[in-house]
Amino acid sequence: MAKPIWTSNPGRRPEHMICCWPECLRPSPEFPLCWYHCLGAYLEVQASLSNLLEHRPGDHSPPDTRTGHVYFIRFRDRIKIGYSISPTSRIGQQPHDEVLAIMPGTLADEKRCHAAFAHLRENGEWFRPEPDLLAFIAQLGAEAS
Image 1 (cartoon, helix red, strand yellow):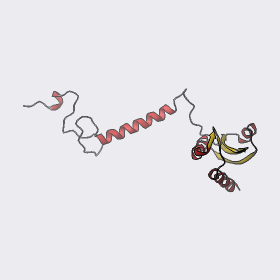
Image 2 (cartoon, rainbow, N blue to C red):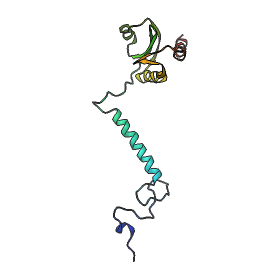
Image 3 (cartoon, rainbow, N blue to C red):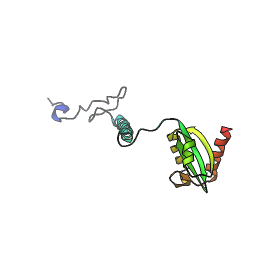
Image 4 (cartoon, one colour):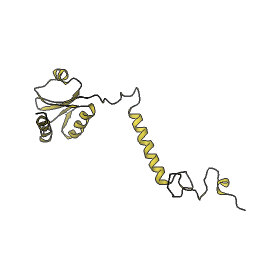
């Protein structure tokens, strides 16, 4: 009588075993999950770990979700996209020739604006006043009226 495979090969599961994922019937003799569900579980764990590492205490503060304002100011030939809980006092501390627009938003909204106009970035939060940025600011002004 032949020995069962799991006794002659410690650590291996019987060849007839299937994936332990509910309703999955794929064979998985080497591991409790089939390759498809193994990959899915791996990607879920990686995403969770990345999220945890981005917000580890001591490394950076958690994302600021307080509602403040995203502001657009012009100084000479550049436009600054900034964020502040108190935009009036913050803008007063910045060199500027003109306040172009102020919209309610979060720090994440400011970052989205920075990403949307990254192709116009000159230095830090300062951008070239190209037509797409100017049109966006004009739209904000129209919505505020």
